[in-house]
Image 1 (cartoon, rainbow, N blue to C red):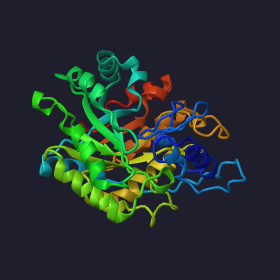
Image 2 (cartoon, rainbow, N blue to C red):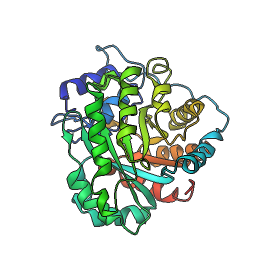
Image 3 (cartoon, rainbow, N blue to C red):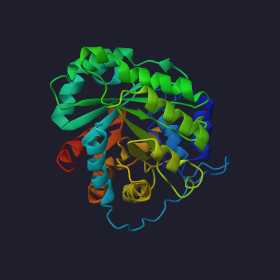
Length: 348
């Protein structure tokens, strides 16, 4: 989904958005990424920007942050996670995880060192990109290297893919292929995480197309592989437009991309978990582990030293069973430190 023109327009139009996926100055898409040589937004970045109230094209000032709203701690997510694991026999993440967009920039693509750092940090889940509508299936090199490296460890690999849903069946087959990669060798991805973005990122997210995609994906996947649907966080502007109920109906868990940009991380995390809990599926937020200024130069730098711990503490208060952050190659040391310190906060 490398659409530099679209990405840059999205960055201007939706600067205040707390988007959907993480962007990196890499030039690809991540849980989508896209970008040109200078400021390259990964697909995730574009998505996140669209999270908030769009601004006129003539302005470059971020939308004002929303005020935090108090929510009673949601007890259902943790309970739902346990119920899901028992009733369907599918593995659902617990603990902490991180998303990987560009394998070559993830410890230089050295699988052994990637798994070693993950274990040292206490990570239990690695989300790795295996394809997009634009690029097709690209996951063979990373899965060939990473899956054997996780053998005899507690680190699980989740394949994520960015479907644009112009052809839901073709998109579903691509991610199902990742789930079946090298399965005959006794080691395989533990789950899949389709990154279902919004029209701002080029995704045709009508309820009909989303349902067709997820039903086909479920039919093609091995019975024991869960669908961890990755969705934009449910801002007030998205509710009523994005098909959250349809996504939830055909998924085993919901992973809202809770990127806060110039909003309080507590606000975005609370609202994401509280709203999505109504669908009675585990809610496992994805936090912004990188500086949002990478996506939108007009924004102030994020204070990740305070904001990442705030995200993790809020998720803990909301009693979620797992969290993750975007992304390995754009996360500074303070993000890794916060993840390490939170390793025992979530159900395992």
